[in-house]
Image 1 (tube, rainbow, N blue to C red):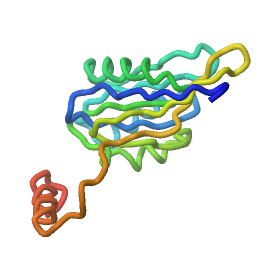
Image 2: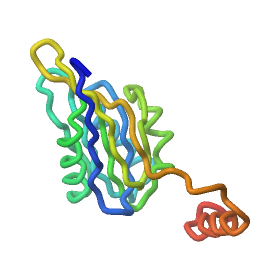
Image 3: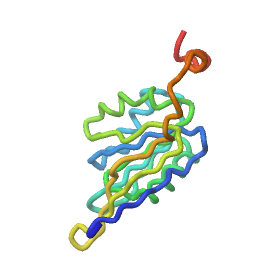
Image 4: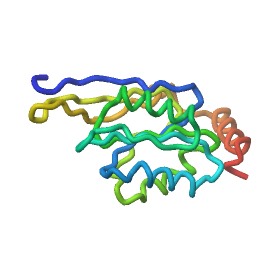
Length: 167
């Protein structure tokens, strides 16, 4: 494509682990994300990384679970896109924290919140003498396999009640 190389990066994680991938714009994001996770679900376990896009260009890491912090760090190194963040979580679901994260002033967008197998579509290009990376989008899961029938509806309703999200 000329001066842009497209790549995909697969999120590496255990099958049932949920994560949120987004874009933010300020060095304090990792601390604000930490506070939001803690305030939203006090018993949640999580690891957060923020990829700084200027200055020292460091991967900033926070969290309250060493394993999830390491998982977040590993994936951030693979993605390497400026101003991106990723949160891996346990003992909570993205829907428990997503609105609070969206309301952090420096959060620009959310690309996905899922436990599905996921690939990140990355654009890499030169910015001056250096290389920059940006997230173009995500491939979250698989192609639909049909429209739900009565049995599928019954399964969905039972599942939501089994995990205590409906009465």
